[in-house]
Image 1: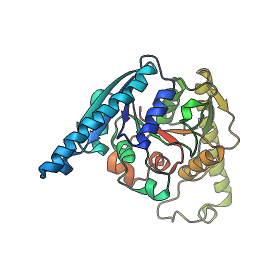
Image 2: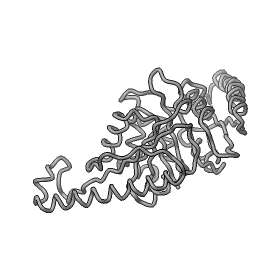
Image 3: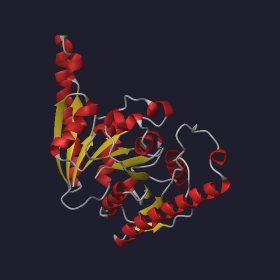
Image 4: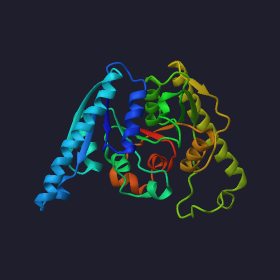
Length: 299
């Protein structure tokens, strides 16, 4: 497995490093620690340009210390300092290096901090060709992987979701880690209907019951499929108590919050860049507003 760790030597980046160092990984996993420095903002003023070059040297020294932590944990790690715009350069490097996963930190937990479109972590999520994990810690708690983890796996039984389930099932996790599988089915409104309209005013009662029943059946099938994959791989799975129907984004976030999970895992369904943002994808909404780490898996 090849993992890129995006760092800027900030506290958020230190958390990513701590998480990567504490977590068990497949045999022969290699890491690339990358820091993107935007020297273009220094261009035109010689003194500032020299300041930028000095910063590059400081960053390089800090990254070597970080790499040593991963190497002491038994992993091969290389360091790379490049010029460019972090939101795009990290994803481009990950593609060229043929990474399987990019790990990046989130700078804040507040609603405003998570909403800001300029977030580097979300920029990486939108543009990366591989899976992306946005690492967040719970207040006052150590890196999640230093203790047994609670992982919420959100699935809809699509090929993408089955692929995501196989991905996490085939990876090692800290001893005692427990998975909770959730599948949320969303009833689609007819064209022209307002999203806030009551379903009862749109569908006849008998049809509404049938639609909800079918949605529950689909969700139950998705949970059974994911649970079987995880259990075959020897993972501990907490039984699902309900198959909710509604807005997947809010229900995934509410479940993660109420269960106190450390990590949410879900699949990306293939949209890229601006298209994915404009469509309001479930994966991006969850990654933006979750209070815990989120991994979006691309197969």
